[in-house]
Image 1 (cartoon, rainbow, N blue to C red):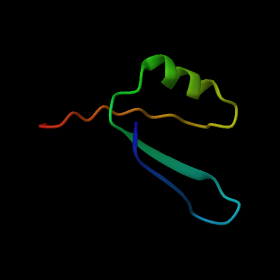
Image 2: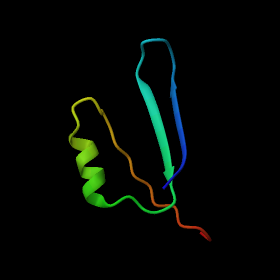
Image 3: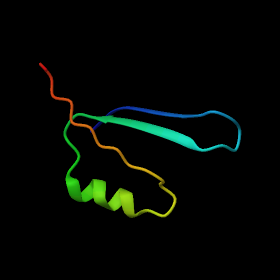
Length: 52
């Protein structure tokens, strides 16, 4: 499930950044698929467990 999603850009017509927070970790194969998309310039996946 998507917990939060934010999209922002610095100027009209400029590059956009999307931050998606999920309830569970994203499987590596999904991250790899996103990295292969032509219009996605960079994918960064962080796993931040509670209690750290």
